[in-house]
Image (cartoon, rainbow, N blue to C red):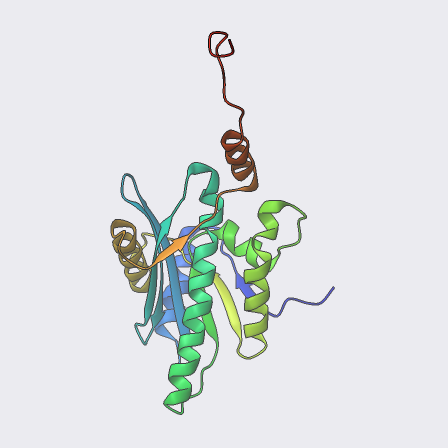
Length: 207
């Protein structure tokens, strides 16, 4: 099996991870890029996701639609998509300025999602949802070093606070650019069955 070129850093406790991320921000060199990602769920308004780059402050947000409880797992995919898009924007922006881009650190507060991106091996429908995004990250990692890092939320980390704020704005704004999450296969199947259910006739109607 080919070795995954994407590095990953997962801490076991929030305090240690907070110190690691703070040090990463403090010691970042001019060629490194940090991309903070986050999501937000605001009842009666919607869900949102955001990715924010440091130091450029470029950001991408999405208002997520069609996220019923049965599709919340798929919503986790959005942060990967935004991070990939932001990496590409950073590459083009730096290239236009004649600058080199060094290692890219993608910081996410969902440890389970991070593991699924770098180890999408289990043969389940849910796991397979991560394969296309993981493959794209793998392709990008051939061009630039990429490191996925757990960044615990609500710990006073500036980049994370910005991503959280942008995700909340996107969740509250249905007119923002949207990311539609399709329903699961089981839900689609049930919808088809309901749509094609034979009409019910009472005995009187059959006379």
